[in-house]
Image 1 (cartoon, one colour):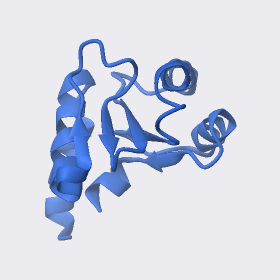
Image 2 (cartoon, one colour; image 1 turned 45 degrees about the horizontal axis):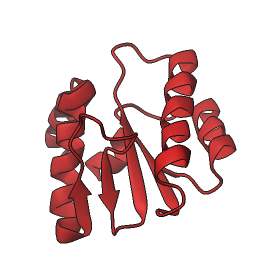
Image 3 (cartoon, one colour; image 1 turned 120 degrees about the vertical axis):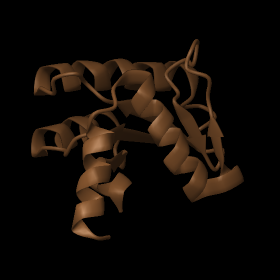
Image 4 (spheres, one colour; image 1 turned 180 degrees about the vertical axis):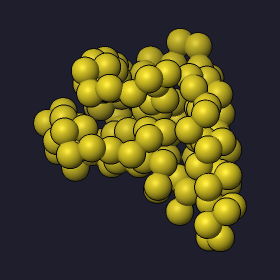
Length: 126
């Protein structure tokens, strides 16, 4: 992708928070997966921001100010909801983040679920 265009998209995605970021994820996943993606209404979603191929639950995270402590707390909360509401029927869990993962973030996600799918801003741009 052209570096100027990539920079523009990156800035736009990084600037989206909460539901606005989830709308971006919905748009990207809808275009990528078509009918194999199910968007989930953001109220009462039981920890699911979308479903891919009826087996992968997506949790999206776009903090106002990124830091490791808040990332871990949010990931723990999201994973708890996944385990309580979706794990028995949907075997895969994907964490979508509007920043770049650090090693500590990757390790934390892997400690919650082995083979957790991890999508950061670079994956979204690709």
